[in-house]
Image (cartoon, rainbow, N blue to C red; front, side, top):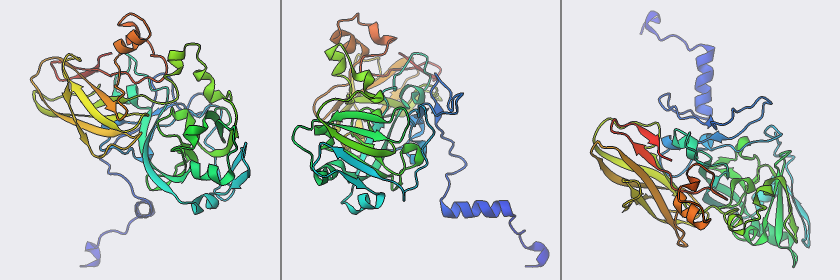
Length: 389
């Protein structure tokens, strides 16, 4: 090869890009899935704070949400804390025999677990004006979380008789604490420092967050710094919404009921013409593993079993699919799921009956507690897909 035919030397910018690719990697330029703010409020807002940012469920494959696309719950009153892992401390105290403070290295010396769990914000309410599944259901994501079982740490400090609640506190200024029953803390909670095989990202609570499987997202405390064993419920910013005068509504708080949603075809998508398609979606429950998913192509008049695509873990997303022949006529698609303890995903009519309301009462209203109602999608004769609430 002559000097004139040799390829040009890379410039500094492209050389830096290559180094970045080698150091961490990058997705294909043809993959464009992104998170977006909720329709009701921009993010960052006028004060520079992050509000809810939605996961692109319509573009995901499989059951795991990439860390970079995991939804973000609002950071009210604070920016993302910048915590040096060398300075990190977790205090466990209150009604315990030996109050202890753990460094990150201390935590990593304990036996670890890696489990797949979903997290979902209580703000995940579908509204008639929402156009896509990202807008109706984008405040849920599912990841593999790695860390120390909280029961192991509680046994290390020795929880005293009479302690019935714990208060978990993070470094966030406003909504940094929440209280829940110690029975849950001693069951399956994780003091997590890893997400999807790498350290938890700053937006998800680096260096340590609490994972409370199946519970409302706000109890999965980010930037965890303190856990206190107490003998009563503590009113915190995170708990005000659970003080209900109606015991039926209160019973629908804390733990997510069975929930599913079709992600293809879903709002904003378009079918090119009649033919065979695979209806695909996600199902999950705070009550355990999903055991069954059914799909209706006629607005809930008849139902057929879908197949679960992969292992259904407890308190985790599982993908479902069903072969479908679209003949070109208008139809309404929807899914419902049943979990391992027999809970069935409700319709808005089911909620209305439970609360002694007219059958269509909750079609345009938030249901009480955590919203897990069936989501319908209308496929028009031109192949366009729309929210059918």
